[in-house]
Length: 565
Ligand SMILES: O=C(O)[C@H](O)COP(=O)(O)O
Ligand SMILES: [Mn+2]
Ligand SMILES: [Mn+2]
Image 1: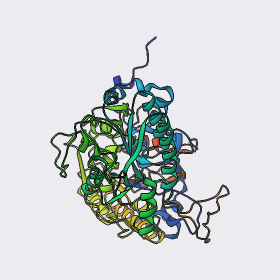
Image 2: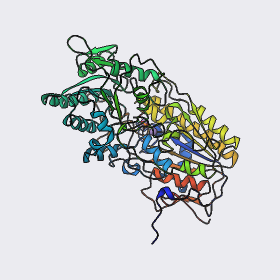
Image 3: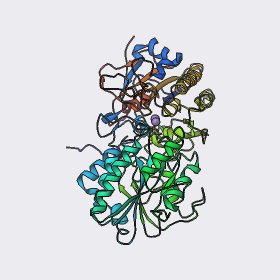
Image 4: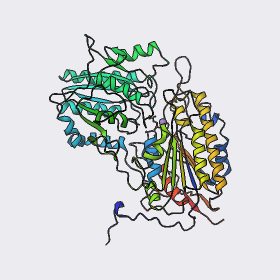
């Protein structure tokens, strides 16, 4: 009996769809952080004026539905895990569900395999004479990192010879509640105290808020990474405290608005004589314990590259550096890593390029890698530069996004409109960032403005689709702006002691809408009714169909059918 060929051996050529034509321009719009929730005052999408999206929902029930964007539907460990951009865009672009970083790290830590891998053995060589530095996001959001994984790694490394450990903590407040940094630091201090009882010299050495220190992405602002470098590596920061807890309390007291968890200024912990307790030195080991790539790649470059020139490192210690995962498979960055990342293969971008589909992708800096790198299975660059064009619009840098909540929605839409009207592309793909980026600030008024701007951007794109007789797919990667309130089990908003509703800055577990349409959509196309639990991974096959191709067998099934009218 013939064995089924492995995915790698399958042909790249896609069969023609029996009912749907080739050659239609397909606009694919991803609204970042745009979930579906019951209308209430904390649903910014509901409160905002969004006539375009409202019309899509009302006009054609057979062309509008909800799909899952969280948990196991996108390869996360459990259905309690909210969705995020990485796993969302991976699923949208790859058409298949892969076990994602969070889950792979869980498995490797659970089985102990992490300690048998090349990456751990590499850093272990520094344990005898050097310090082990752990740098990452202190959070249980499960988006970039998880606190329980840090705890296990601390435990495992100390049991395997690490004698001196320094943790460099980035406070969250974005994937978890603002102010929760105190609880995480307290718990970490308890763990470190236990290690000290066992003779391990373990301490927190430096820190700062993730959006201001270290965790920039897509090279939006290298100064963010420089602040982190100075604090974590050089042991220099404008604020010096005897402990991380003191840092959190004093910095928040001084300026509670500015020193939120997300934007906490950089600090170093110093000893009794004012010396920093944990700068990175030659011979030390460094692990960045975030599993997600986008906000660790920049620091990874600074830690690894000999000829790095994006800021003055002042001192470049010779360390043994490993990432929790390898963050960029193309760049092989970092060279050493503790857990192998998901090998996302045969993405729709690659299939379509190999079948001659011309693609234009665009977003602003903060989401640019989402519709390119994440979409293409964490792969940078083009599949075929003769067929693809990726365009980045610079994001505002150095300000929180509630200050300019319209962000670059209009500019992205205008670029997409021009690309559609040029007729040079078969697929025009964009990410509109507002619902997510402004939603994360917790500023409801600004988020409402941002949602309106996103809706206006969609209108511009749909008008262009109309003009060229094209097709559109409008969807989202996960929820955010549709719920800005923390809630109890019955769904009622939680209030603080003054009766104020507690703000939710994170993503949600809500499903996201998907709408299809446009004059080029064949008349009998409608959503199937047999895929009640479909998710983001079903979108790629759908888009392939709209380009006139059948999707490969190993893809999650298409959402659409063609019925005789
Ligand atoms: O990195 C961030 O901004 C948040 O932690 C997650 O948001 P994203 O998944 O939408 O990027
Ligand atoms: Mn997102
Ligand atoms: Mn987000």
